[in-house]
Image 1 (cartoon, rainbow, N blue to C red):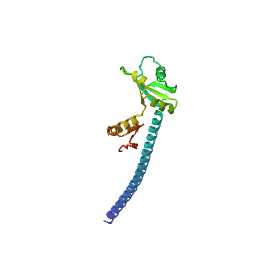
Image 2: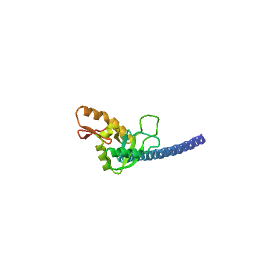
Image 3: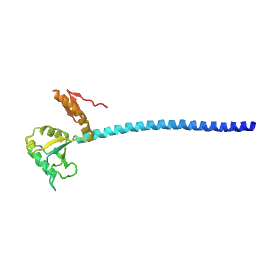
Image 4: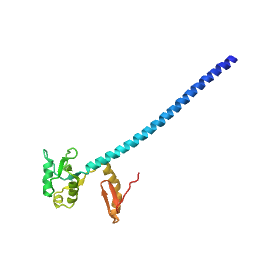
Length: 191
């Protein structure tokens, strides 16, 4: 009987050591998991910060551009020459740096928009203001629009109902890039 008790005591001692080892391993795994969660949270924060920075840089870069809609499209056409010809008709100084069509050519009667990158933002902003009521553009069915990244377009789309309802109510409502204002107060989107 004493031998059986000793044998059981040894087995119990072995089980205790095994349980202690497993408990210490579980504690170490919990610590490792906690450390990994902290790293993941930090990486998420960094990723979010980098995405915001990319969004800001893309928006800044695009702020040098305007889109011109309505320039007819022909095979082998030098789009820069066509844009400069239109530019001369609306009496704008030679301030365009690069010109190219957007997207792939598709079989449609509607010409693809042309992106214009200006030599500096002062010229771009002056042209943006000057072309608003230009008779040549209207008569030739040409129009300029601002160049926005996808995030800015989505944000403006979400803000548009608030801007429209404010305008319908007779309030001064407007956009500045991807931000909307009513009576000079910024509209904040819910998270």
